Image (cartoon, rainbow, N blue to C red; front, side):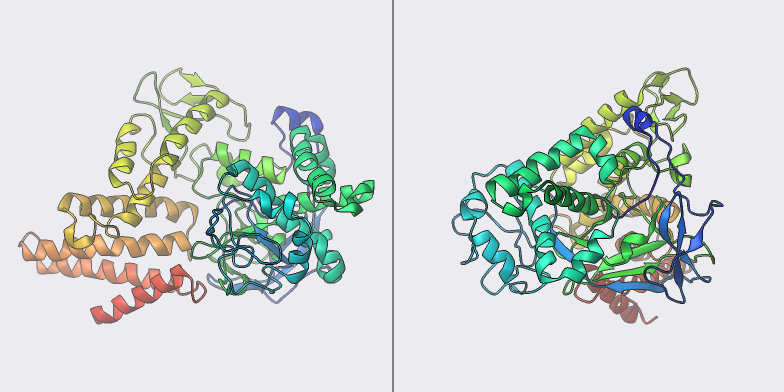
Length: 533
């Protein structure tokens, strides 16, 4: 789930350039000089702490139990994600760019339809936005057609949320003021020539020269746009339910610190886009409240690189500092030299340091390793998500290159966990015994890693436990019917099914009504009822 909030830190130009900067330890449990802040949200559950190194972040005021609701708040601003995919400006569902696609009569931008629930709403396509775009059709909507390249689509949609925030200056100045108080890291971004040039060319100049936003002619106004770009990069959340994709800024959720094995989980309401943030496990008094700005199921090399590029800090949490990633070993590779050893990062907090085999003298550079992982990832991305043989072949092809828990293999296994039993040709009643066994094995392997990296009441645990209950149940029934298992063993397996369903229900019913996860939670509850538990 890629990137989310501010992190204050002191800069070091030389180390930035060498990608060796170790500017702070993001594990907030370190003994850091801090004081309580009076500026921002407080409750009986948490308060804001502040330090010169970390800035502001949230700390538990008492011991918190798993599942406690900490924050519920609607977005200050919302807009399309930065991608090459066209979406409706009202509800953020995917849309086409062909002539048959419905478009807004006022400005020409693609919409899902005339009855889109987001038309005229604060969280959708407002009348003010429509008027501004309508005056700029040749430089905006008319450029969006079925011949527009994905990079060009991306460039145009990237402007939407920035323009929406600029419009808040006039139409909702209090919301705009809250946004401008968020960290932007503008000075550090200015030192990053590639990053600064992107926003200067693709955003500032386009809004000024092509969209003719005359206010941007002044240097201070152009600087304000750069500030907004930085605020979005550092603080925004990517959200979406049932196909919708959007990015948002929230009033206080951005204050959570980062950790690659966090103690909170969040979701969003598909109707209001409000964030719901809960503890995922027990949190000690004075422990920092954390979430992950990177996708949990990525290896340390990729996670740290992602966070530096978007958030401008090198993560130094406990997981990133551990070559075996809290025991998950989800970055480990097979040694290409001795074929028996395991290749891991020697000093994982040094981004460009070598990786080495634990059984021979073989070493490889971080750059060579990253290039290799990019090639393997490209192979995975080229496989259709419903292509069972393709995914199985991927696992077979790279089993002698990547260790079983490597995040790229886990990604393929998770896809198989979801599609075995759910698509034509692989529905449960028609699956072979071999495929049912595979589904169970992949689910168990995936769950074992999630229990290490995202323990507690986390969405992935709820989803994978629901997927696991089906093959366990089917195998138990088949074993009993064939006489291969005893009644006692049947009861043991049924108890496991019951436990999986109960845990899945308890986790997924925390998701908002109307979300696919909540519906799966209801299905788990119904299955429990039918089992007579």
